[in-house]
Length: 428
Image (cartoon, rainbow, N blue to C red; front, side, top):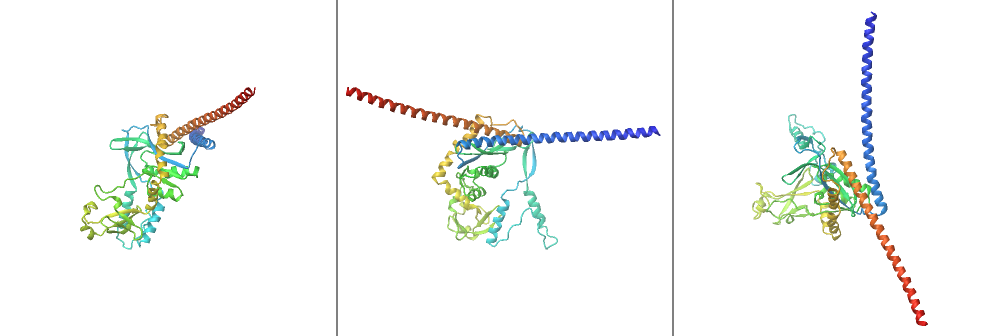
């Protein structure tokens, strides 16, 4: 009986000891991971402080000129094997301005007597008929449109496939950067290489305008000339200086400018001076203006206008097209033409120096967080180097001016003494 009791006691003691040991091991592992996370967060905060400190020093010295900001992106080759990749279906990222655009679309549709759209995230409305499968088709279509197939690297899953031209493909990151007129980097945001410049514009723009609210002009290339970006910049009271964007029209057809929009009658006049009436506003925010098929069937230049079987020409116009036209008007202004011409010596020069002199053509780090910190530290070093050279040139100019002033005063004193000496000798 005593042996059995001792045996049970030993079993219970071993079970408690094992549980205690495993619990302590889990707590130690948890503390180790939490300490590692704290170190990562502290490292990121230190890099951010270093970057902001350099900008504050440059601003205090008067080296910054943030009235005009130049925004662009450059690709950085990732440390990932191009042969180690998989095809993966991921949910499509929703547009940030989706709610704002949907409200604008519904207001436009109601103004034209159309039924407003319902939100894609809302459940389908109940139908009166019991055996009506319209809602199921709508759900299937929305589910299919909500996913896309992308190429992901198994070595570095955070990077993205960058396709340039027909043959060049590589896994890369993209550094979306904003600099001022003197070439100082004011803000940078790193994204995977398959993220378009216009998609990452909101992050860069919001951060740089929050830090420098005195910005008056945003200078960017034609990749940023979208209705949303034009509206966002002009609504904030700033000007978007961008380049000409070639319209995507039918090859060999009429020029795009021959289709004139009449704001009073809300219609489009075709090259044969026939009106294209408003039909609807689609979910992408474009108003559709369609022609009369009876008139188009007898049109002598129909082959230059449309190849549709039903003889209908459709012209699309975005609900925010007016803001895009403001950007076109600014493009012809001499002030903003000069600013856009300085892109090659500001933001493009920053990217050239970063890749040629500071080894930013490719990265050895993996993961979006590590690459972001690495890029931010590179730009902080470039800003510090530029600030040091600017201060050295300024001191040399001041010393030269001081030396010139002293020399002038010395020559003036010597000339006066010489005149007095000559006068005395003449009197004697």
